[in-house]
Length: 457
Image (tube, rainbow, N blue to C red; front, side):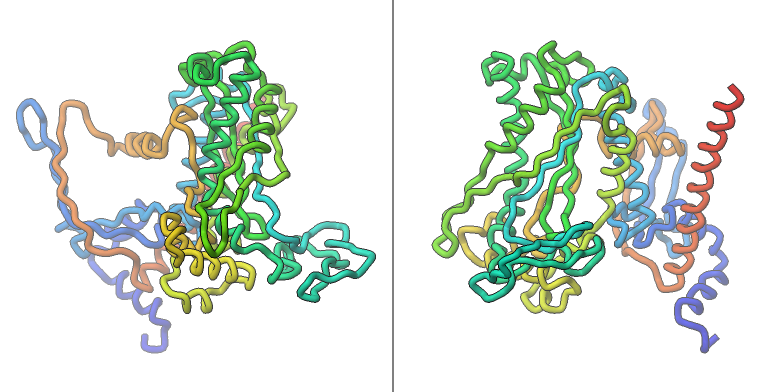
């Protein structure tokens, strides 16, 4: 036993516990969560009419007198099992807004819908991947810091140089960080601009747009190789009552595309004036993509769009190479963080700018680990589709944990810890892998069965 690794010894200890079977049931119920939350307490379900106790649960009968519940972290680098669950919820959330379902009518599929991409502007030339030379220049000129302005190499997409500045001294790290800090405001003004442009193009008073149509969206933020955020979004035009209402006759996909492009080119945000930096004018980048989603298959596939968004929301900053998944608390933390020099420079810019009083509301030091970007990875308008809370409630109802009409539940819980011991982590990882394989085989069997049925028909 002494020669075994600590994790193996701990796993054997757990397996010898009389309540090991119940502990396995708890781990399986969390999907093999990597960092479960430990709760202690009880619930009592009463009949509201008679006061009779219908059911009672207390953690005193559980292993360690605690109940394990999912951590629900969306990042695969933090908890892969919970991130898979989050990705599934995101897929259904986005897909419902495209094709209906989850209390959204199927008629939304015939509303004008776009898949758009908005990028950050350039903050300086960076190395690029592709089949052609990175940045060819015949004159061999250099910048003011005596570094080449060009690069004749051909970089593969996974090359370490891709996304790194040609000259770090020329790169505008200040503008990059402040653009991240104001990206949410840029998006808000972009949406307002789309509504205004649509109203003007339809001959409406801008303030009366809501009486004629409603703009709904779901957007996801993604870090590019240069560690700058760009935005993918599904944008849909409905009638004034939302997804149940037909859009006005003038509300076409082409008109919506024109409004998206016009607003993206026009919108701007000015930073607070700083004696050290001045006042910056922030805009979207020049690369703007807006493609219609069509029901006839001529365009991006609805399921593919939903799957792409769902896949990305599980990625943490560390996984994309643009920051870390954990906050840095001191200047020295930045120096020891395992990131590229480019990302480290951005984190240092956050720290330095965050110390200026005029930028205090931006909380740049708090968000230095995400390079100043403080928005949610996925956001949506209220009427786009269902919510994560509704999806969780539906899942609880499916497994029989929903509230029963005519009853009331009294719950008393307290937090008593989180995470696993080394042996528990080993067992939980195995359970998570088994569940993932079982889920994949189930999906493949379902697809194969569907194919068989089609051939039989």
